[in-house]
Image 1: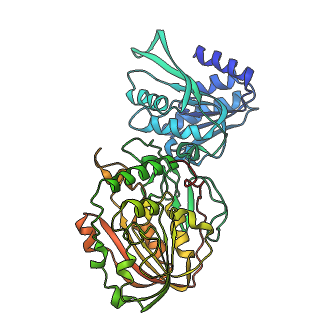
Image 2 (image 1 turned 90 degrees about the vertical axis):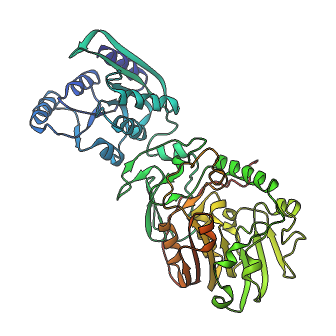
Amino acid sequence: MQSYITVIKDFNKNYPIRNICEIGFAGGHSAAVLLYTIHSATYTAFDKWENSSYQETSLTWIKNKFSNRQITIIKGDSTKTVPKFKGECDVIHIDGAHHSRSPQLDTINMMRIASVNNLLLIDDYINSWPSVIKAVEYLIKNDLVYNMKQYIATEWSHHGTQKGWCIGHYKKTWSINQFVQNSLNFFSYKQPLLKSSGNFQTNSFVFLNKVFCMPSWQGPECEEHIFTPCSKFSDECFYNDQSGVLAVSCDRWHKAQKVKHLAWDYRDTNIDRNGHIKSVNYHEILPFDLGDVIEIGAGPFTQSQSILRNKTVSSITLPEIMAFHYMNHVNNCVYKTGSFESLPTTILSMPADELLNYTRKYDTVVMIDGIENVYDALSTLSIAVTLLKEKGLFIWHERLWDDYRGVANSPEDREFHIHPIRIKSVVVKQVMAMFDELYLSWHTDELRRLKNKDVYFIGKTLSKEMKSNIPERTSCFDRNV
């Protein structure tokens, strides 16, 4: 404990301590030491309060002894109460539950509320408590702390067990409520594309009237925070149990584009399966005149060549980031000469995410497996809706990933490396609510072949206002691949 006192006093000389936060009040022993050592700071403890009679007695003594100090006890499971805490902590002492994932969750959650200049104290870093050791190693491995040092009490033991602890600092580039943004490093909050429902907190957002949790947040009110870093075979830092992977970092997206380029360079590019025509009878469902058409994420062959067969079309627009690559390297690319059949054709070599400021409206929007190729699913879905004229047609197919958990099936999982965006059914249902349904199938023959679940939907736009306040982000398109 003497090392605690010494390091706290030294820290206080350089960075005046205003707020002390502690997980694990217990009998108030460490609280007394902290309050004695720091003469003016407030004190907040997070504790399950399971031994209430003993702890109330200790708390009464503490409050009487330090009657001029602000002392707050937040009762309950710290893995749930800390994520709700709105304050900021200069000194953090973690001595809560020592089993299962509790130490790791506590150390991650406390980082969010740590001030820029903070002092981190973690008790019981010793072989007797492997979960505590694992939690500290996680912080070090993921570069979330610095100057982390272990201390062993060589001449003191408790019940025959040697005592140990860690002292260090969280890495913080700004002060409060930014841990999610710092960890994922890709969201920036700009003016929302659809009508805003007001400011949203970092743990949730609104998309078409429904509240969704941000990556790493879960629970009925998005109150539980469990952060898992991404790796070569894991997108868990972008993943949410409720919605899937809705957005990825620019680095992740550019890597997917490189793999996609290689995949097309080495496949038999003379083959165009165009298998979606087997799933839907477009001739019966769609009107004869489809007007101005845009196909988002057209690929080299497009689905429009099947959908528009025996229909009247005024013009076609093909936004496809790899358009020029397909035109130069894919033998049967249907717009290889710069035009689609004999129609007035506009080719946009850009990702669908970049159509935000595209003002032209269309009678028909086609998007077949377009979302899995973008870096921001919600912005792309919003764009698809806003591109439609009043009573316009939306023809949409997407793979569904309700069983996906953010991890590749194997190191050879090509789909994981090419298509990081993976949405779940709940997102699709919110989008479909914007339309008058003309056709809906949740399981098509094309996706049974690929052993995937999917949705095929055709709808006509409704005059329906739905609120969104979604996280938008910096463009990935203008970066070097």
